[in-house]
Length: 493
Ligand SMILES: [Zn+2]
Image 1: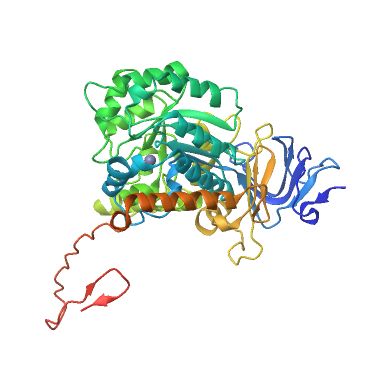
Image 2: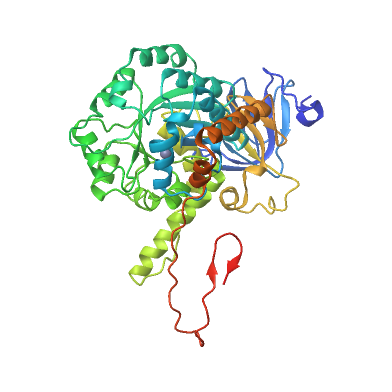
């Protein structure tokens, strides 16, 4: 007889099959589509069967998914995980404030243990929120010792990660050539299984001398994909794309992060060479890289994946990414139509597409779509059950894709499975030491604050306010004094 997991003190002994029962399953696999009242059987680390009223082995643990939505684990293709150590610090930043903080002033003070702390917390946050695969766009790796610390943290958490190795304080054409860099790949990546992958992370400045050429050659020699911030207003632009194209470095394994402020010609080049985009809508909207470009990318048939960028500003919540991306795409379509005195009668971008971007889209961008990204028999079992019987938001469940995008949140993530192992059940993490992350991050905050000093800390967190110029209102009767908002919750006359 199958045993109910809840009756067993949330224990999921390894090696036992697991069966999810009676879920609304969003398989993201065109041959299965959506299955209501469906079951998924997991044996060892893979999906063994998908269907209705599956016969499961007697030894299987059963998870009651009734009333819930079962979907593939989400994939974040660009997150600077080390920056989670200062979660929320930059809530009021622009991209300029960010560059000043990390690139010009304070990035250099971070130590290997600070990288470890941020990565550990970010990795736990990802798994907890149903993000089973995360690219750690790790550009704080000043030496290989930092990279070891980054990987130590990723290996301490039972998720799937890709270390995108970078160093914002060094030249990529130099650090990729260092013998200790090759040694790091041999020691920490090669032969370590498919829960830890690697990319090279660096940006192309558009310098006509194209110094990044040597870094691209290193990527080719090590057989590593390249991920690059492209189309960032004021930082990277069409020149970088053209240089990459002219030198033959635009390949299907490339990931173009943001891809916002680019010409049609650059989009044509990305599309023609099979590259993927990583869209961080909340980042593009707040920091100013350019308008979130999915409304352009889908017309060029450029494959889209989603990402959160950094928790120093935003959350690590891909529900929020899906919602923001769908909203931004539709907002732009309405705006463009109104400019032509037209109205949009039918939405082009649908909730279903955005859920696919958050799952299979990410897996494809990482070249992992034969292993993960959909609920397909034979694939690795990375699964998320969205279910919350205490919530007034989980019923009625009429449009499940729309429910994922516009109704559910990460607080509704009930169960998370990575590689066949249940790592979260009944809203509680299993076998994950959140307190060690709390202690490590606490030390990093204390260190950074004392190293910067109170004044710099406070000024960095609260940049000088932009002046608001009030517009004269012709409909006012009297010339009474203006009430000026102060931004601190009070008004001042
Ligand atoms: Zn970024």
